[in-house]
Every structure is written in C-alpha cells, then in structure tokens.
Length: 252
Image (cartoon, rainbow, N blue to C red; front, top):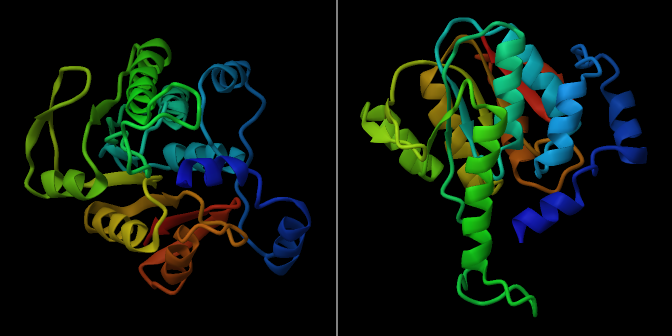
C-alpha cells in the first residue's frame, strides 16, 4: 500500500545512498535550510504526516520567491501537515496568495468496508478519520488563513480549474477556480502516469518564474515520481532549483 510504503521509506534518500548521490551532484544548487523554529517544531509533533524535511526548505524558498500573488496549489492533503506548514510560511514571509488544495482522502485499498487486519477498524472509518483530522488541524493551525480545500482527485481538480468552475470547499466556502498558478506542490498518487498528468496539468497554468515541487522524486526513491523529475530535467522550459532530495523546478 502506497501510504505504508511511503512512511517506511520516509528517510530512504539519506544514508550511504544519499552520500553517493550528493557526491555525484556536488555542484547541485543549494537553498538555505529553514532556521530552527519553535512553531514548526511543535506543529510537526502534533500533526501526522510523511513530510520530507527537505520539502520544508523547498516550500520556504518557493514561497519567498513567488513571482506574483497567483494561487499556490497543493495536490494531496492527507492530515494537513504540509498544508499548515505552507500556511505558516506564507504568513512568515508576508504572502497573501491563496492556498488551494485538493484531496478525496480515498487511498489505495480496494475493500473499503473490511477491517484493517484484526483491529476492528474499517478502512472507511480510517478514511473518515483522516479527513476529519485534516479539518481539525487546519482549523487549529491555519485558523487565520484557512486553505481552500476541494474534495476532488487531481484530474477532477484540473478539469474544474480549466473550466473555471465555482465550487464549495470542505469548510463550506465558495471558491472560484482557474487562472495562473505561482507554485504547485504535487503530492498525490506517485504512480508514473498520474504524477506525469499532475505535472502536465500544473504546467499548463504555472506562470513563468513559478515553481513545481515533486514529492518523493529523489534519486534513490522507489516511487515513480522520480521518473517524471528525470524527464523535466531535459525540459528547456524549466530549471532545477535544487534536489533536496526531492526535485524543485522553476519555470523560465
């Protein structure tokens, strides 16, 4: 199951393999690490998630260098850890860009009614718990700047974005989708076909100077997102900002 594999490999881009890759890419562009921060520390203690530490540095860099006030888009929200980190970094850097996220909280398991092993907890219960956890975490940690979160798969989200649909989000607010994007964090399905479509869809709306961060795209990961990152490396329309270990690109 993808969620469990991802958790097990959360730190898989480090260790000896990471040292080898770092030597191979010794001229890799580097971005500053986010300084020790009490709030982010407590946030990450309280909110569950599988957020790679280097992604926080990439969020910080992208948000500090946003080319405009166009929206930030996050594909995949889970329990809200990355969402709340980005909301904080927006506030920290004085940015007012809307943060628009999408997730259906429907994971890989097919038999939704069956219990998880012999726990007595059904997968439907688990899904609803994760969704409610996102809502609670967002209300707690992003109460002054709630993200707009629509309950859609990424393909559905970009269809709605293309059509400039107006939708109700999970907090009961109306949101008009569409237009340019300044930064897209792609953290939905990491299957090649899906990650490639997510990148292509984000690319259609990403403005020049905007950023795309591909989660689980590091060189030593087993996730197929890395294949998409390798393809983008040869795309002259994008420059590599950093690999930390996941790939952050900027549209030129």
